[in-house]
Image 1 (cartoon, chains in turn orange, red, purple, cyan):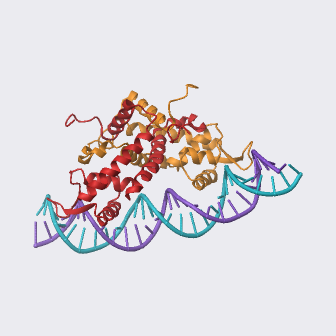
Image 2 (cartoon, each protein chain N blue to C red; image 1 turned 90 degrees about the horizontal axis):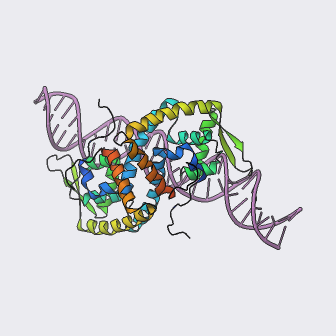
Image 3 (cartoon, each protein chain N blue to C red; image 1 turned 45 degrees about the horizontal axis):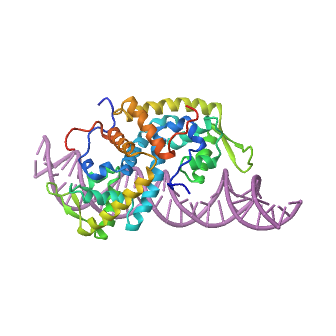
Length: 159
Length: 159
DNA sequence: AACAATCGTTGACTTTTTCAATGATCCGTA
DNA sequence: TACGGATCATTGAAAAAGTCAACGATTGTT
């Protein structure tokens, strides 16, 4: 098969005005991307969402479940399920919130970090093939635009 | 309140490496966008998907349901439901395929085009507020990058 | 003419999403 | 200090969405 197994030919219907609709473009890229990402993560028993949770658990930011729900656009009850799963498999654990004892802080275990490193490599390779049509600069530009659309102009702290 | 009612402040967790993950950025922008889009379209009894179908029915491209399913990344049975709904409301109708009598071509009615025009205006206004953080050029750049990621470099036919 | 493949459709099944209710805890105010 | 309202994680149920196999009708191929 071809060098990249992702979609290549422009479909007939893309000519319609809706082919420029941001909402549709996002939905479509997200749909095809999710499929591939989940496939790439399946080797590690992860999916896009559980990987996101695991990543944030490994980040050192000590997120609470509420923060995870907000950041990942999920219902709090969905975060419970995700964390339950990861915790049962020994990849993360719940710790008591430091200022707030109602909140649970999600932190990674050593095994969690081990799995995460492998999964991250696989995911990065996967996303690279998805965006194979874009140059390195375009790839970075896309990220920057998405972030700006979401959170406004980057504050000039950190790099 | 702020000038745009959409999200503005960068959340704490965005600092994590995953804040640069294209998959997550797409998911997040799509999630918040869908919510707003559906809200904007609700006045016309439409949602993102039924609007997409209606748009393509109005495009003159005479799409078949199979083409709609492929283009919108939907299961054929989902297209059945969407078209059923629009047809019951008199916005589109099913016509027999020209070369293939198995296929159904989806075409708009006069009423369908009327509704579509109004809904499109509302949606465009809605998306403009969503991408308010982007300049006009950045907005166009984002569209171009998304299209390129999906379908490769634009073929130099049409304008 | 026979066969496999495709289109739209249906219906069953699974997964995901949504939402209200709960106990524990926090915060502000009296 | 004690009260009241708000927030956190959790549960469970209901609603919505997604997935998938099977079907009749039709197509194209052998």
